[in-house]
Image (cartoon, rainbow, N blue to C red; front, side):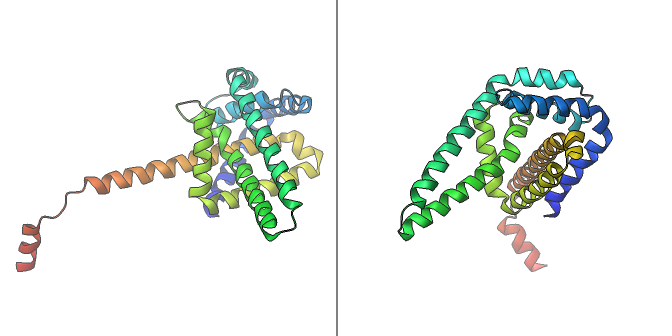
Length: 226
């Protein structure tokens, strides 16, 4: 939970430094979101903006638009995958929920669990598309699933905090206008950066262990004799 809180803290820390400059971006994102059809590219544009801010590089309103256009096709692919998954999950939950057997109830809960995992994957998916060298929704989808399964406590803690922040932000209009979408995007970008650093560190440790010379029997015998 402490590691998840670090991503929350980092996201809010960056937002605190840029919240005045980010207000126009946040407002345009909300307007685009209200149209529905412009929501997917707006989400990707917002993440392109917050990624630049995460790296300490200057980002402007133009960064948002360039990101939205650059990831236009990928954004609608992401939206389509979400629509298909949610439709299938809803159909299966309704179908198995209407069964009177214990198996039907168990399968319904199974699809509830799949839905939760899918929602948790969304915290990482778009930041992965932007941060990885290969800008692939499918690769980001795989990495998001791996991250959820490999770091379950981290993901559950982060997801719970995001739900609380979202609830608190939407309860009043002022925090929403001041930058709730920007904050949530920064948190997601920070979380993916943190998980990538952890993964790279683990790979380096495994490589170092593999490269360590094994102690030969002769050397061990010499040590024993001494």
